[in-house]
Length: 217
Ligand code: ACO
Image (cartoon, rainbow, N blue to C red; front, side, top):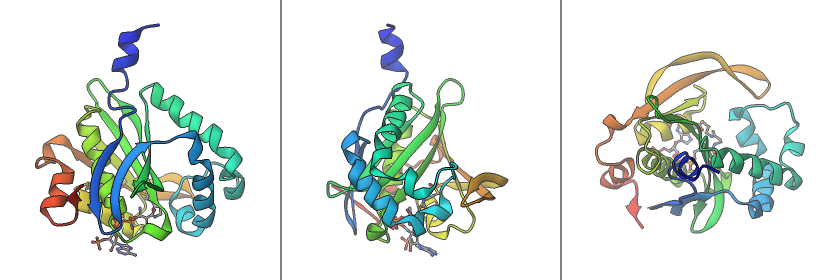
């Protein structure tokens, strides 16, 4: 076993991130775990109408895909990708409670040092600044411990709430990807947005604090 390669190929993992206080409570990020299954399944099934229009299809029916029995293989797949240094799959917690997920994927080092980021928040907690705080913590983690240079995201033009979250954190639009992703039964256009480390003024979290949108916790 090559210990040097294992310890250096996934910087920043499995390190938790936080904490920021927003209207909804104290937001933190921590690695997904096997015992998240019941809450993950309950929330994803209950929030289907709010989540399905924005999430990639995988050919499996929503109910079956989010059965509690599906979580062990979903979770171990995410953690396996994390061990290989390709992904950082986090749970978003508010006041210590499961409130959604934030995933950093396609992590690439070398001359690219880039990744994509995506997230969802349970309907019962939306509108309280949770996604904004979680995204800020995730981006700061990417530019800090993970040592990336660029973070990008894709979002459907119709997803006004998520576009607002991305804008508040400082992502800028780079273009429209035509028929980019199969979502909700069709190939959907997506906006490509990105931020690079040069665009930060300190950190994203400290900018939110300066703007009065969050406080340190
Ligand atoms: N039109 C315009 N703005 C809106 C709308 C709307 N219909 N709905 C909400 N907003 C605004 C809010 O007013 C707020 O902005 P403000 O602070 O300036 O008032 C912002 O959008 C939401 O900010 P937060 O409260 O931080 O976000 P929240 O915790 O509510 O989560 C999210 C937003 C993640 C989009 C949530 O609704 C969700 O999980 N939706 C379903 C899944 C999803 O769309 N995920 C994102 C996919 S794209 C990606 O991952 C890059």
